[in-house]
Image (cartoon, rainbow, N blue to C red; front, side):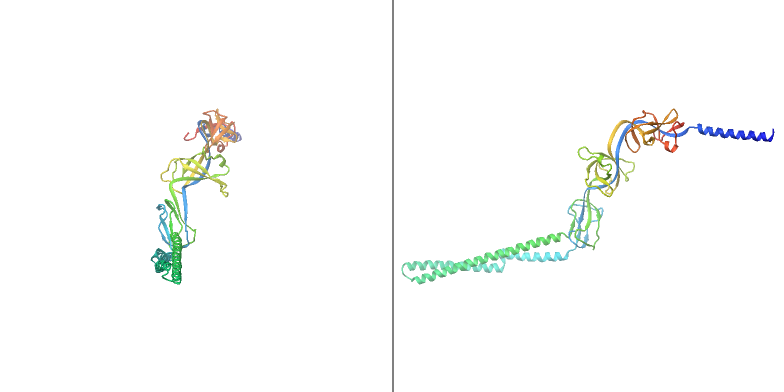
Length: 396
């Protein structure tokens, strides 16, 4: 066979093999992953994140400014209401209280009649009353004698003047005694008020817990100088916890509290793979203007063992829930259409979608139960009518 003819035959053979390969690739079906349209529960939810918080939490502040003399509680300590947390050194007030108590004891003794001043005034008043009684008797005797002309009228006048003088002196002594008693009582009461005020100020040096709970934070050290109203401790009642969620302002209108509160599905990083239920109890009216969100408080339906303040929570706040509806995987959707397998080929159908969650959407029209929806159409770069080889998604 001539050489040039042999070359032509070889070229034709190569072209035939190449054409067959191209034809095979064109006719070979594209592998796709499918998930059947099934019936189930469709849930529309608002996603939010938040933290575990105590229902009651207080910041304990210093009521006076001075050196911290004693720290009696630390983070993690369980405390009772009124328990000492710290003591602030206050030597000036303590000295003033000691002096005031000494002066008050003295004033109380004086006001009770045991003072030399009152004793002297009482003795003077008694002596004058005794002299007045005698002068009164002498006046009566003198007047009787005068009626019988035994003595002169001058002697009667002298006796009457003496009795009047003694009566005036006795009344003045009584007035002086009453005035002294009132003055001493007023001094006693004034000192008592001052001592009470000083005792209150000294009591303010003792920093106590306003509630029973757990010390979450301690912000001071022994020997540190604190200012008045400076935060020293944070104490919380951790017997009951709630979840504070931050819900975007675009979604808050769909969240409900009050008589028909929204249900909440919760998960925590501390408990992977577990879901918990809760209920919205309150939507705070004041927004977080930086985050553009609202704080939503959620009560746990059941206590969770091991749950701690500050743990991070993820939540789906249930807006709407429907049972026994057709569900199509979200990945099959392309706008208002969805990818399906029909007679071994990829097709797109117009669909009507209802509520949706992160994985599935309610299918109102466009397919029936059991229809195979293509979940990887985008990555497979499918074209309508292309032959496909479908394999079910793992786990379906």
